[in-house]
Picture 1 (cartoon, helix red, strand yellow):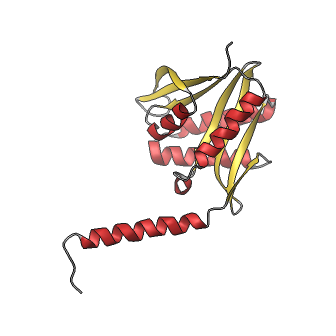
Picture 2: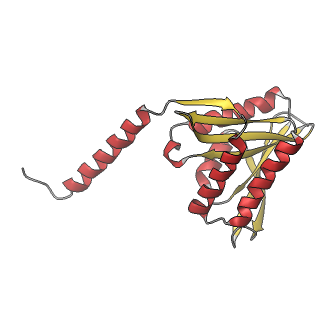
Picture 3: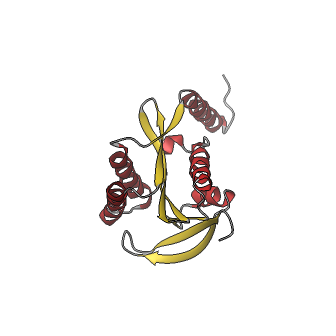
Length: 186
């Protein structure tokens, strides 16, 4: 067999693409509302992934755990949706009311192997539709500047960045951004 220069790279890429496509076949994902035990797991995965992918440490873990503790303790209006595949949580998103007309989008996460298949969009649709159904006039979220793919998704739903702030709490030089979506005139 004759191998052309560069053919090894091409073959390796084709094998990688085929493996990705084959792995997607088994990804039968369902979306449901939160049940007991989900909040702890979602908080855990946020902390693990944000440490691994962005270097955010223990103070970020406190922030995430505290936000879930407050949600569970006070039960404001809102909902959490969980994406599952074969009984394993692979994504989440939440909406929490901050007042009668305003909601906050929180706890949005997609496991790395489930990114790029439209799951984030499906969860965003659930969250935004819920906000419309509950007649919130404004939805906001806080994110970090380095999450460019998420920013693209947020903007496709009409969210716009309205504020930036440097936050050295989790890691030096992290820039947080507040994004807002107006659902109807205030």
